[in-house]
Structure formats: C-alpha cells, structure tokens
Image 1 (spheres, helix red, strand yellow):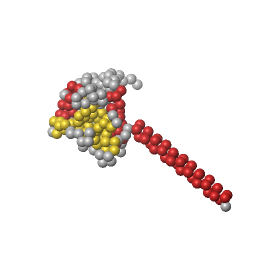
Image 2 (cartoon, one colour):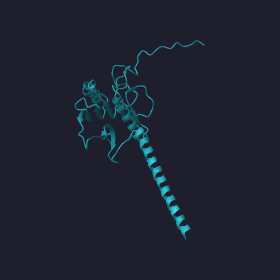
Image 3 (cartoon, one colour):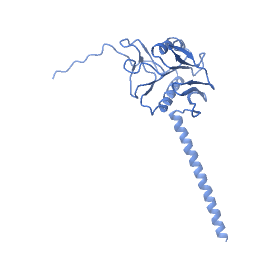
Image 4 (cartoon, one colour):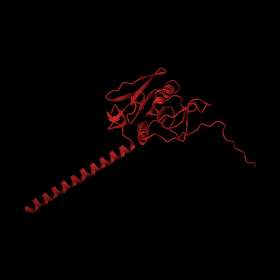
Length: 228
C-alpha cells in the first residue's frame, strides 16, 4: 500500500512564544494560586473553563490576532485540555480575566489589552494586579458596560466580582478570592491540605489529652476502691 505523504499545515497558530510563564516567581504564584482557587470553586460545574498563560486567538485565519491572559475563566466551555483557545471554536466571550502586571506590561495591560478585552472578547470583569506594587494603580478592577469598562469600587478593601459571585483582595499579603456569602477567604489546594493537617493534629492532641484524663480518673477510682 502506498504511503500517504503528509504535509505541514499552511496556517499555524503557535502554542508558545518561548517566553517564561511569568516575569518573576511572585507573578507566577499569583497566576497558579488564582487558577487553583477558581478551579476548586467551580469544579462541580461542568461547563466552566479556567486557564491561563495560553494563547487565545480571536480572528480566524490571522495568527497575529492573539492575546495571552494570565488567568481567565469562561462559561459555556467544558473542562478539557486545550493547547490554544480559538474563539471561533470555543465560546468567543470571556467572563473574567486577571493580569499579573509589572512596569514592563503596564502600558499594554491598560491600553491594548483593555481594548481587546472590552470590544472583542467582551470580558465581563477585568482585573489588573501588581504583586510588587510598582505600578499605580497596582490593583484595579473593571466591569464591562456596553463596550466600555468602568472601574469597580472597592468594598471592605476588596473588588466585588458579580460575574464570579466572589470578591478579590489581599489576604495576609497575597491575592485571594473571598466568598461574601460565607464570609471566608477561599484557600488554595496547598493551604487546604495544610489546614486539614493542622485540624487532624489538633483532634489527635485533644483525643490524647482526653485519654490521659480518663486514665487519671481510672487510677483515682482504683485507689478509692483499694482504700475501702
């Protein structure tokens, strides 16, 4: 049987630009933690897709028309492995985007990207956060009204994000999501494991203390019996 000759696709949508995931470990941790918390929060909902640091193409046939949000969430897309996000194949409009900003990305985050997110991807909520506080404002959130963003006022030091049903703010020096219904900060997987470990240790300590007290009581009863 004659082997078919395979040809490379004439139009390529790159999956990487060869650049690191983030400028610094702190920026990278912001991205990882926020994706982790959101995935835990929406893990029971099948059509919520959360990703980051991925090329998102928004014009079919033009690989130059792309953006790479640090963190994004979109409803209407199943949890799956995607190598790139193409708006003509997946849901074209996003619900939430977070950019971990720095002085070198400041101009693009507040100008070029804000236009793309508002007018093309119609991102309902867009937040910019600089973990080093080197830009001003270092933390800001926008909600989409028509095709224009309006700044979201802080409430109790946090940015309310109606589209997520959560608030975003700093907790103990790190960026975290807050559940206003439960009045609680949402933990990362690592933080939950650590909290559960501490809870187990505390329960074991209480059990050991109770056992020791019970043993003392038994010994006292035995002495009373022997003195009769």
